[in-house]
Length: 207
Figure 1 (tube, rainbow, N blue to C red):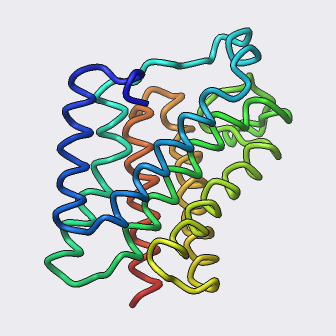
Figure 2 (figure 1 turned 30 degrees about the vertical axis):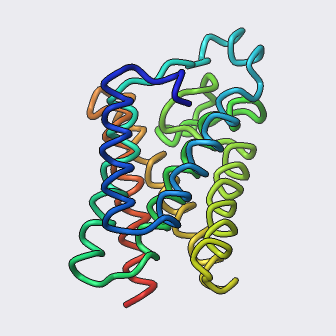
């Protein structure tokens, strides 16, 4: 992952990581690294197919780091001062992981259909869904829920809620992707909305 980031991206990753470590604990930081590892694996998987379709993205900039890392970092900071505990943070990570799996693995199977008019579109189109992408989205958020069971000691029931929260965040990301295709917003803004939704559902879980 480090080799895929530009220098500003590396600097921002360090700032976010240090903040998460200081205001959370080591388990919080490990969960971020799990997300990064899963992201790399999802990106690398199906390299030749993605390359042929013209949708393979290897390099990552500070904008990618900001869109995926800002909200979870803010959630950790707010949780530190407001006593939320780790659940909203875990759910925000689950949401961005769900989105990453859907976008990187969903393009490799199924026929994507745009939510705008329910028309079949090319793989990689924002605001589109496919059976493979939907399943991969749920798998990504579930992976975070399972990891959180070991890192934070949450129960299987809470892990299931984490998976559903992440999945919901991914769905909202897809909905806002429709506007992105029309020129309103960017992939970065939809990613932030995705993680915000995950965190908000996490707050509802602990309320």
